[in-house]
Length: 150
Image 1 (cartoon, rainbow, N blue to C red):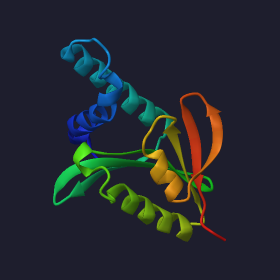
Image 2: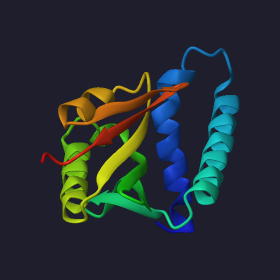
Image 3: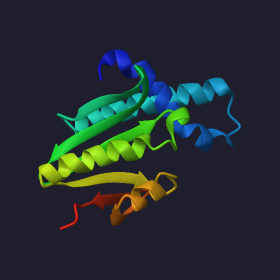
């Protein structure tokens, strides 16, 4: 990922919040501006708190379809963010990305962790792939963990 990808990641971020903002009686322009500000704040937060993070744009057929941000930590690989455009969701792409990450984690003898919002529909995917909730006392998020089978 480079700074040139920020317009794409901003649009991707907005696509992950559309349902959440739908019931609000705000004008569409206000929603757009709010989402742009939230994306900028999220990007700054990631840059500050996950120094050295690997930021990848996921592509399919040469077109950007998602993002995957990883942070290497002692004993673990933290998924800082994983998201796909709406058209790419539910097609097995996210699961394939996670399986590749699990293979890397096995080789490096690491666990994989991710913070997941309590209302995120991807929770079923994480549970199906073997993630378990490590800490459910984090406000709107739970900390999930995947470990390779012994």
